[in-house]
Amino acid sequence: MRNENTKELVKLRNLIQASQILNSTLDLRELLRIILDIAINSCNARRGTIYIVNDAKREIWSEVLHGESKIEIRLPFGKGIAGKVAVTGQTVNVEDVSELQDFNDEIDKLTGFKTKSMLCMPLMNNSNKIIGVFQLLNSKFSKFTGDDEDFLKALSSHASIAFENVKLHQKILMQQIFENEMQIASEIQRKLLPKENPNLPGYSISGINIPSKYVSGDYFDFIDDSDGNLICIVADVAGKGVAAALLVSIIQAWIHALIETKIDIQEMTSRLNEIIYRETSPNIYITFFIGKLCVEEKLFSYVNAGHNPGYYINDGKNIYHLNKGGLPLGMFSSAKYEKETIKINDGETIVLYSDGIPEAVNIEEEFYSEDKFVDSILNNLQINSEALSKNIINEVQNFVAGNEQSDDWTLVVLKKES
Figure 1 (cartoon, rainbow, N blue to C red):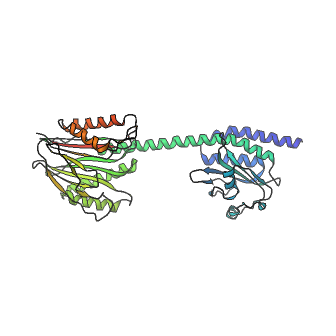
Figure 2 (figure 1 turned 180 degrees about the vertical axis):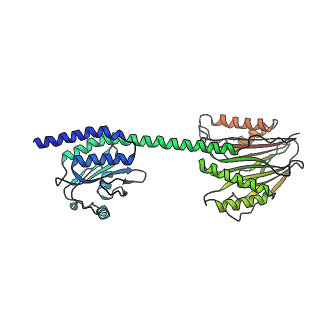
């Protein structure tokens, strides 16, 4: 009787110590090791494993084995004793596992260990949800007792709180990493955009970019070529974050290098497509619009590589889509591109944009839409390009008010003044 009382006191002391040390770490592997050591020592097991439930993959996994061996184990729900306990929540306590039909000796073969007795129990949180499985092997006293089961139940209560703390900590860390990445991407993107709008006699030209929280690959640029012409570019790189922003910076460098060669924008688009296809991964593609304004001749030539069709609005407020071109850049190495040239008369306007504007969504999950976008353009034609851009952006912001901006908004306006 005295020996039994001593065992109970030891377990009680271990449980008290467990409650103190389980919250001493926010590292999952370290937490698993601590819990397992407490369970093994308190229940006099030779070895043990703690499996963690992954509901999304419908499996249990373990990265910690007691002793020198550390082997990752993944079991589908229902496979083996531990996999079955993860589904049923029923305790399995046997003196000889050979009596169990569900016993899977694959892990014994893998580790060289010989399992005899086993105590397998669910690890439950405070909502009685199974979040893991205790599996203790080979009791030093031939079999595990009801007291061992009671101890693991009590340990589960403390362990589940520690698990929740670790999960919360990991979530906060991931959010911080994500926000830091978005901040870096936003800074890269901001530095790539023009510092000021072009100042050309007889023209009103402006560009604006409103980045979303999840900065994507929108890019616009104004580049003067050596012949006094203005190159206008609007592009959208597939992807978000730092990777997309860095790719935009590389593409910008390629564009500037190609402009220096004085080749036509049609040939420039073909070469840029070949470079992107050759130098980037297969899942990368870019929608791309390049226009060349010949200032003196009042001509605007463009190539549209899979981008949203720009708008050309003549002095009679008739709208024409600028959709001549070809496929997005990077899809096929041998893609061909067409060019179109239009005459820009006094009072006429060209509008280029990214898909984030017409696809902006309000709290009723309605799209701003191309129709509203066009109406807003037509209602603001009497003002200069910068004021027109600001009015459109304000209208889109009012439309989505209360809902998070999910994509970048980029808008370039070119007006021939009367």
